[in-house]
Length: 305
Image (cartoon, rainbow, N blue to C red; front, side, top):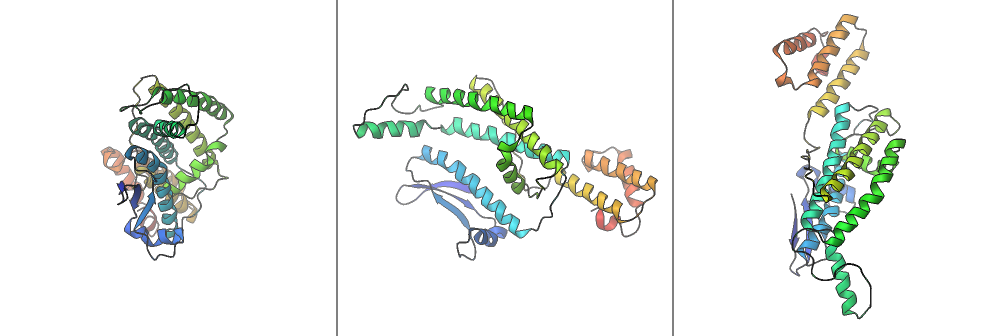
C-alpha cells in the first residue's frame, strides 16, 4: 500500500507500507539502527498535489528497489546460468508494460509543464528578463501542453535511432542497470557472463525500442493500450517451468538412466511446462502422470513437486 498524503504544514509526502515479513530486513538494509521498518516515507517538498504526484513516481520505484534488496537478505538464491524462454519473455514484457504505464502517468498527471511555469513565474517575480518560445501562464487543466508535446517529439527523435542502432549491434549495455534491477525484482540471481543474461539483454532492448515507438504512436493520436503489469512476486507458470526444468536436469545427472526413461521424462516435463496442467488434454495428462510414476523410488518424490 502506498499513498501521497499531506502533513500538518500542507507539504505532501509519499509512503509505502513495508510487508510484515520484510520489516526487519528492510531496517537492516537501510542501516538506520531501527529494529523494524514499518513504512518507507519521504517528503515531496511541495504543497501542489499535481507536482507531488509527479515527484512521487521515482521515489516509489526506489521504494520497490529497497524492498527487493530487503527481500534478497531473506533468501540465499543460488547463481543461475540459464533462464527459461518464458522467463525472459515475462521480464521483457514487464519492462515494456512499465514503460507505457509511466507514459500513461505522464499524460494523466502532466509532465514538466508545472515546473516550467513555476520557474517562469519566479523569474518574472524577481524581475529577471528571459526569453522563451513557449506560452507562459497557467498549465492546461487537462492533458499536455504544446511545449510538452514538442519536447516529447524531440525526445523520441534522439532516443529511438540510437536504440535501434544499439539493437542492430546487439549492444544492450545501456540497459544493464534496468536488467539488474528487474532481476532483483523477479528474485533471480543470474550470472552476468551467461548466455541467458545476453538473451535477456537483447529481449529488453527490443522491448525498449518497441516502447519508444509505441509512445511516438500515441503522440500521433494512435491508440496503443498499456499491457497489464503482472506482479513479479506472485507464483507464475514461468517460475514453475524453471523449477521443474531445473529439477529434471538435477534428476538426470544424479544417476545413470535408461534412454527410454530419459525420453519419457523429457516428454512429461515439456508437456507440463508448455501448457497449464489443468488445460492439458486427457491423453497428455495420462502420459505425463505415467512417466512421472515410473521414476525410481526416492527420485521423483523429492524432485518433482
